[in-house]
Length: 367
Image 1 (tube, rainbow, N blue to C red):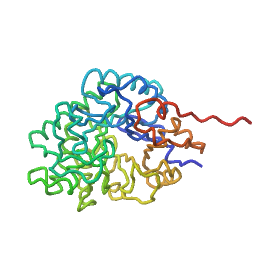
Image 2: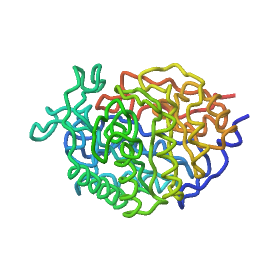
Image 3: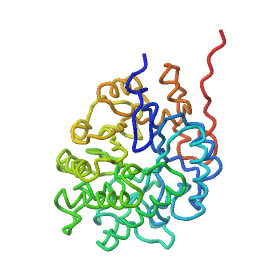
């Protein structure tokens, strides 16, 4: 039997969902070199739309200087907005709901990909250890953002949210996870500032909370969400007081913005580069604080029964990444316990249609 919870309705902001199988934000690198979505985006997202189902777009740059990964889309000029409009129209025609994930990568970018060779930025001048998983090679040393620049980036997040709504999205999800810019401010390992944006937990969480404030003011709490990775170590971030840090952040969201569309948590053990599943719940402390809808991710593409069980026990939504790449009809497959297509990791970040729009829908075997 499929999970009753996973296939029960729930309201997200002002959107009524018919089930709780969420398509996670998935970087696919199929945009043009000018960060414009192509016509293939329309087919890709349309394939994965289900009536009353929630999709979160791939992480999308809020500005040309928010990150220079090649073939990743943006939402900062008119051509991009118009291209995304075709995607949202296709999703809405099939009865789906789609939020855009807003992205600034911070210190894990490269000056070579910035328009004028600008140095990458972060909370502090601490480079991430290890190799850059997208670009290869060592991470560059970042330049700390000034307070004035932080204020400017808050405004750019706000404008990106307005652009997303103009493009037809039902809301936005702020990318404050996985060792990217906002997460670099939250974690004590990457934030050694001594001003109002560093040191104490309220200071280290100030930037993401101010981004939430600005976006809520621009488009409304019901169209605003945020993704968090408490305790994760992806891209060399760590925190000295994980539960205290994210409990404070979530408590502030609950106090000031209890009507946010949802909070999206990733289990600390989850790793986009690893295919094995670890059955541990690191999200429990924050679920107890936040009273609104919760989406949980955690490698459930390789453990769908565990996903159904978690949704049943905790009355939450589950986001799937790799399984949604390979199975455009994933909600139906999970509902009916149909077998899943296997995903091809080698095509995740390539730039053509192989491994993008060519995965088959389920076909029942002939009697």
